[in-house]
Length: 158
Image (cartoon, rainbow, N blue to C red):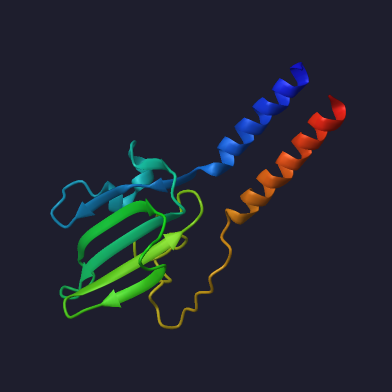
């Protein structure tokens, strides 16, 4: 009986670890004096959220004139983003949308994916984006495999 309880505790701890997506959640506008959301959301407490959604999401809106001037930035988590990796322009604004599925992946300046702050704007016409299964897919497989092992050991050994 004691062994069953240990297996159950280990299983619950493991499932809890992989089931939550951590995302930066904050916003700022051109009028805000605190630009931590733009320059380094991990530097301030309260900007990381354990989300129950599928995607971390970033939306950055810049003015076209003056070029690159920030109007607003939003970091959040969503189940169904309107756009995955898109740059949409109108007469006055350029909007950058980025959705991702790994912990704290919605970092960066809002124009890039966060892996390279200076280069590689994901709206560059020479960049090709291929959707994949995301990094959290392996976690689902790990949880399923772990469940089968726990059930097998509990059934066979107890």
